[in-house]
Length: 406
Image 1 (cartoon, rainbow, N blue to C red):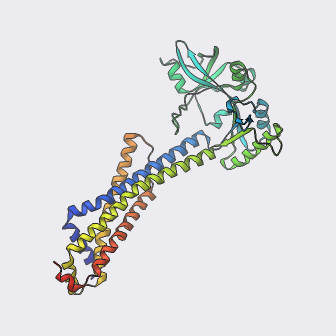
Image 2: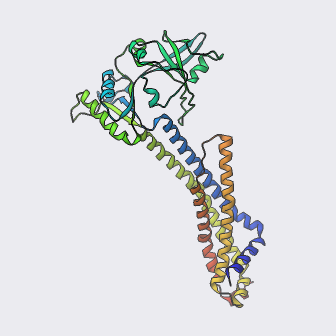
Image 3: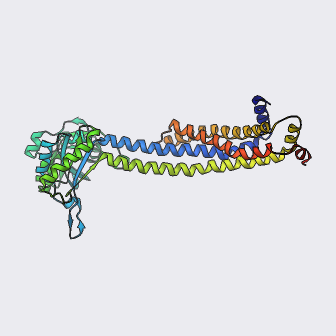
């Protein structure tokens, strides 16, 4: 018996039991759709995180005071004074693997403009901070090196600050805002960047010359941290080693001494977040994959029922010359047809569900072609795997016994 006839017989058998065939497919449909949707959510989250990290500067390096122990207690980095302005200047002058570097000092409090106020913080940075964090000026200009040298009372603000301090639409450029009774003249407004993947408002920012924050707002000589960017992402490790070597020398640390500073890179953050999202994606896919297993068990169950119902038919086919391989192929084709048809419907529903989630819930969703192919391959394998045993049972029936079956 040729393959075409076997295929026609399988189609006819499924058509005679449409509702039962559809209910059997349902487990496969739900399983494939769930796997595609879950993988799409996981991959979308991963791509969103990677995009956010890229926008922050994939080659960014963060240096913070840390590692110091006092009385067996690790000190809070914000209260430590192991990073000095001289350290920043030395790194700026000597590091060859850095494209930009900026000190960072931060003061929190109330910003006031006329009758409006808003709780925020002022970050003291250098001009290079814009390139490190990939920020751009939308209006006005960045403060200058002369402003840093003279500790000028100027600042650049984000769109969130504009919305809260100038809600009537007044142009903030040239206006004065007060912070801890210190007036700061707005010289520029940053382009809006929105919220990042961790829910932080990237537009809630006020940048001022680091000398202004250190002298006029905080009256301190140490830094909260240093931000830098490697020339290229591939040079990040070399830049970290160079920074570590220079700071250990500047801090006069012995070989046996621990670092009194901490260096973090965006690559570490990216790797950590990618590992977390991959784990969650795998977990979601495994949970959704349970539906495929349930659907496969449903196929096996229905194929067993089908073999039992059609025992006399099987015996009749064998008595007129059908071989065991023909019977095996017939039932295997039915099983694969159920799983493939269910898989196709599941792919359509999964892609549709992903689109609806992206549109309605505004979640980052991305359907990768390999996830569709994988789901389709798995459901085909499911049909063969769970349909084989019932088909083998049918092929091994004794024709005489099958004809006598009631």
